[in-house]
Length: 132
Image (cartoon, rainbow, N blue to C red):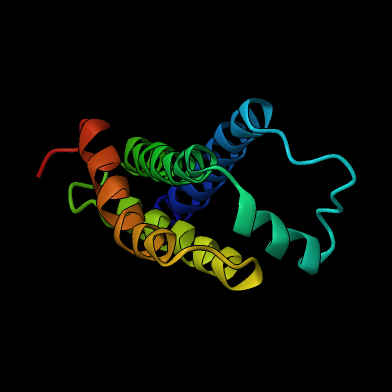
């Protein structure tokens, strides 16, 4: 039960970190006036014209969210296998892939969204001090 709760906590913390980092990105690169973020066509047009720095900031959010989620899962579970951290990263990756399907993203963001979360979450678990 402790493992399951640690995974859930890791996903929640990871999601919060992603949201915070992406919010900071929106402050730096605000969306154009009149954009309806609930309209898929508006989001598709935005993704075609968004500055590269804003896209990098999104990937930074995914990365930091996975690290924070893995750290949280590892700290709570105290599991030396890092499995809770890895599972939290896998769930965060899956949620990111859902976003990638809902809003068009450049190919490089697909690659980063698939490649980064699980290793970053594993690293977060190691950073939590979980020993093998």
